[in-house]
Length: 154
Image (cartoon, rainbow, N blue to C red; front, side, top):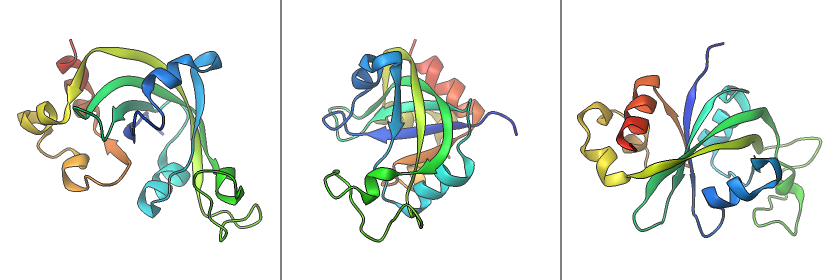
């Protein structure tokens, strides 16, 4: 399977790109996703080696701020069956997991963040997934969209 590209959203007050880059070896679990379409991407489609645009949502301004790479494909999200986690789901169990996560490693902080306004205003990004389903936290990104966003950050 060829390399794919994704945009992962996170509120910087909950988990920021700086947090990822500060992690030991810059690797972290991408857990706590509680949307079925995003779960399906994590479980079925996101693979080791895929590229990730790290997007700060609910920020001023919201923007792509860095890149990461997937280091572990989808596996059950154990935070769902931990009652003390921020995202417990009593319907999910180790024997019947509902939610999935992946591991990512931070690669680089963008020289200039690429804001949502710039993304929406760029002609080559008119069909980007996040315009169609703005509330979902994980989006597939076309290779040409990945390239355009990275070019916009220089």
